[in-house]
Length: 167
Image (cartoon, rainbow, N blue to C red):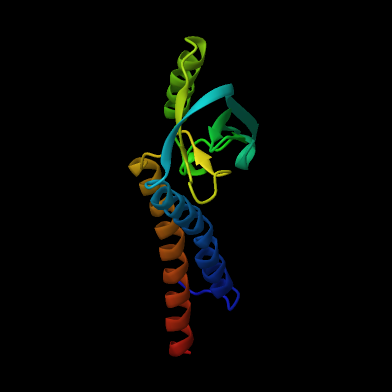
C-alpha cells in the first residue's frame, strides 16, 4: 500500500499520544507506591458526589465521563487539614459502577455519623487519600491504550521507512 511522505508524521503523532495514558498510569502508580506507607487517620466527610459530565463526541454520539469527588477534614499533630483527593487511581478509574459503589460506601459512613479512614503522608500532611488500593483493571486498561497507540505509531513509521528504502 503506497503512502505519502506525510504519513510518517501520523505514526510519530500516535507514538507521542501514547505518552499521555502512559504518564497518567505512571503518575497513579507513583502515588500508590508512596501512599502504601502513609498513616491511617480518622477523617470527617464534608461531601461526597459522583459527577457525570456529558457531551457530544466523535461522529455526534453522546459521551459521558464520571468522577468521584469527596471533601474531608482530618487532624494531624494538632492541625486540621482539608483534602479532596480520593485515590491515586481516581483520575484513571474507567468504571463508573465502581465510583458509584465507593460513593455509596462513603455516604453510608457519613450518614451513620462514623468517621472514615484516610491515609496521610507523614512528611507532608497536606497529602491524603481516602482509598489507596491498587486498581488493577483501570491500570490494565490504560496500559493497553498506551500500547495500542505506541504500537500503531511504530508500525506506521516502520512501514513508511521500508517504503522509502525501496525507492
